[in-house]
Amino acid sequence: DTGVSQDPRHKITKRGQNVTFRCDPISEHNRLYWYRQTLGQGPEFLTYFQNEAQLEKSRLLSDRFSAERPKGSFSTLEIQRTEQGDSAMYLCASSSPGAGASSYEQYFGPGTRLTVT
Amino acid sequence: LAKTTQPISMDSYEGQEVNITCSHNNIATNDYITWYQQFPSQGPRFIIQGYKTKVTNEVASLFIPADRKSSTLSLPRVSLSDTAVYYCLVGESSGTYKYIFGTGTRLKVLA
Image (cartoon, rainbow over all chains, first blue to last red; front, side, top):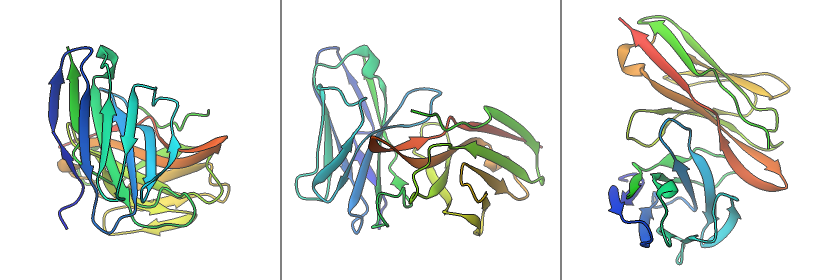
C-alpha cells in the first residue's frame, strides 16, 4: 500500500487553458474526496465519490470544474478556462467504508499545486 | 453555513502538553470528528478520530463533550517536530452534506 498518489505534483498554466489532475486512492478505499487549499487557509471541500457515484458537490465547484471517477478507482479533476483565482493546492483523499457519510479517516495525497499565470 | 473555528496560533515548549480546541456547532448527528496535522507543501496527515467522550492512540488524545459541539486535541509532551498546522474536520449537514475543515491552529514548539 503506497498511500494516495496525485499527478502531477506541480502544474503551471496560462490563464484560459484547461488542466486535468489525477488521483489514485488507496486500493481498498471506496470513497474519494477532492479539496482545494489556498495559501494560509484550511482545505475546502469540493466533491466526493462513493465508488463511481459523485455524491456531493460544493458550491465552490463552478461549471468550469468537473470531476470523474469512471471505474470507481482513480479520479480526475478538470478545470476548464483556468483563472488566476484557481491557483491553489488541490488535495485528494480516500477513505474506507464508514457508517453513513461520516468523515471516516480520510487519508490525503501530497496534492497538486496549480499556478495560473 | 457555520464555520468550524480554532485558535489561530499557539506556542509551547518541548515536553509540555498542548490542547487545541475546535468549535463545530453544526456537526451532523452521525458524523465523526477527525484531527489532522499539516506541514508546509504536504497533504494533511491523520492524527486521531472520535465520535464521543474520549479516544486515545499512541500520539494523541481526543476529548469530545456530550453535546459534541466542540472537541479538544491533546498532544502529550510535544517536540520540535510537532511544529505544524493542526486542523479539525467534521461533516456538516445543512441542506447538502459536506466536509468542513476548521480554520487551523498553527502550533510552534520552542526549545
